[in-house]
Image (tube, rainbow, N blue to C red):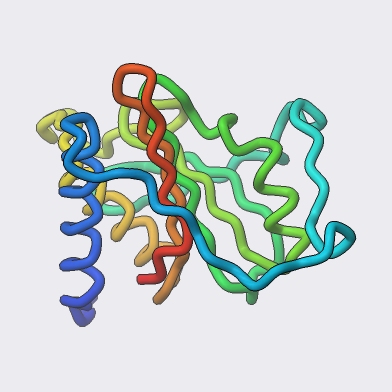
Length: 170
């Protein structure tokens, strides 16, 4: 099945992977999102620990993987892909996903390779956890789910240091 390669999307994910890889070395620092002031009533309320699970997890073939993922929100909403980091898993976002879904976003929370129900399709596929490979996996998930653009949020934890990337549209 022929399909066009979106070079902009691939360059963006390559840059994102390099940014994540540079974080432990202190080359970059956290970026604070700027938004218009909102009244306290307009902000969604989230009680940590309120949610303990997602609905039924889904599976999809994406690239070299059979990816397990949670999905919430309207299928026609703007896509948000929440990416966990080591040593965490999709449950890092169990309280966040419902808030985004209630705001109208289509929330996708995939298990990255080596986690949860995500499996390699072929036994002979090389196992690799490099950031660039994870970016290719996310592109494959987006293609498999027919997502052209998404907002990415990722949690990368190198030695007790969190880097939160929000609001990157690809």
